[in-house]
Length: 445
Ligand SMILES: [Fe+2]
Image 1 (cartoon, rainbow, N blue to C red):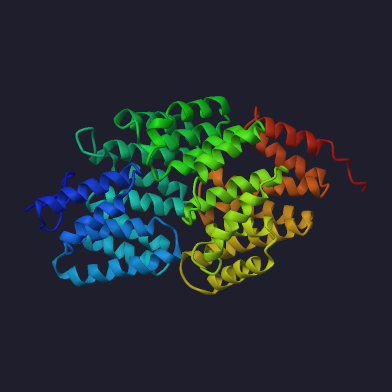
Image 2: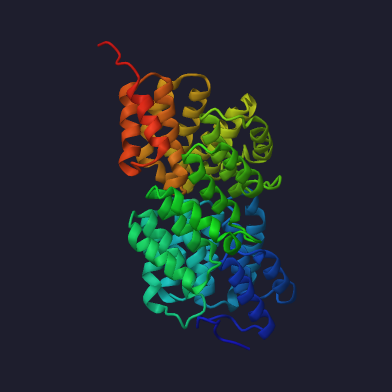
């Protein structure tokens, strides 16, 4: 019988084997290695009354961003309620966070995890699930400050220290502190070379700084660390493809897409987001991705009515626009309207970003480029409100620029291309875009 886990956090009494199984499942989740759900299910099969095992399982469902995960998450919460009389305060905090997420209060979930972490700064599960929740809400400040708030309770002797550094690295990157982010990310990798989130944090630094060749080399030479059997591999492949896309190497991008970003007919929303986002970038640039987009649009069909997470809805809309699926486009719009009527964090996401962007994508597809450009340029400063990273949300800026060029609006196109060049002056794509914008003749006053 135990009173604490490996990091000294209080845990309700359980068997040695259940605690060991919990630690193994947590380790898998920490590195995004497959398959923590199978591991924790095996623990729960023998020890169904272990609150932290249920909390871990619930956290995995939270991290899916899918409305479809709410059913099983609700079952986890119900199982937890039946045990609440024998939970400690830390465990009750986990279930309060899960319940908040389940009712659509994404921000509230983060607040409950913050309370847990204030009392138990070595609660690695609370930190990681909350970090993902912060990511899904585009909360850059918390991406940095939540890991920062616990760092002093950790050192190299505590199991999982490197993962805390990796999370801090990503938060620093999202706050634009690129030097410290890279340093912290590389420190994390010195603890665990296969830490896919730390790899990802360093990849983001290189993406944001336009270190194209170095970024590609960093990911390619470490592929055996982050790619095999890793649930985040599709996303690190996406980052690698971005570097090749910048130089217009479409064949290489498509090869990475087929082998890494979408190697199977997955219906995982997080994976579909990256598939849509990469195909949309290629589609804007005239590459033939129609067959691939049809397959991705097919997979998005089951999410079109969810009204759960506007970030996903917008990426579904990209696929429905590129494949000219009018009925599916209308379903997404209706879903976003429904979300706005509901409570919860997604009402704000749909109102501030989801619906304006979805409408702008439709305007783009209808050839109303000036309307699309203006709407997307207006959303750009608040786009973080619907979640994701700077690199992901860049698709809004990119599409605004493309729309401005197609609309023949040289002034807006130069302004947008100029913003991109100020961030990444050596990007071949940005240079070419600015040249195209500069070549647009002035409209006679
Ligand atoms: Fe990323």
